[in-house]
Length: 251
Image 1 (cartoon, rainbow, N blue to C red):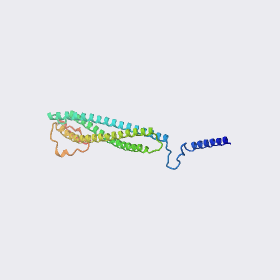
Image 2 (image 1 turned 135 degrees about the horizontal axis):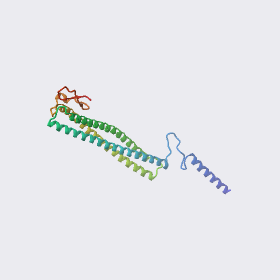
Image 3 (image 1 turned 45 degrees about the vertical axis):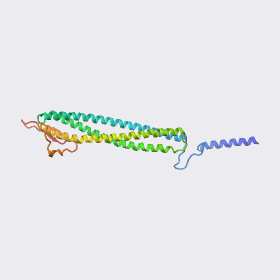
Image 4 (image 1 turned 30 degrees about the vertical axis):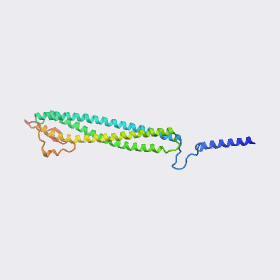
């Protein structure tokens, strides 16, 4: 009789365990209420893995943007140096005097303007990149909030929290990298905009000097005229027996 009771108890325990496995977990039923989610080591591990992937994507995105800044800065620097070399050459020729509307200087002026236009394009690319980096900063802050919120999820083991601390540390470094990138972009954009503002006026004065074939005082009534992009020097109509002159027409 006692043996029969023991067997009945074993069967009853097996039924309870199997029933518990089917209904939820061995340690308790699954959460089924609206808005609730099951917690446990597997769940936390999954969140940690997702956060690690998000952090890796964030770091890769920042590295790409740093590369874009370096490439654009190098291109703007190359265009600026080419422009400055052309301006030095034209200024030296005009100081010694040359023929009014010298075609060689006209070609150099047009090339200088093309280089300045290229710098303008580069500044536009930097502005677009700055917008992307600002968005990246928001992503980094959101990721950091998610990492810290995961500490409170039940069912984690020590290794889970060790991984979370590692991700939190990496995310903090990414935020610092984004801050530096924003600072570098702001400094580069400010510097390049100042360069463009100065050199547009320089090109306008050179246009006048090439027309007269020497270095001269740029007329006061024209000094305030150039707005936006510099005006392109073009060859004007040549009268019979008269020297070629230039006219500063709008692009």
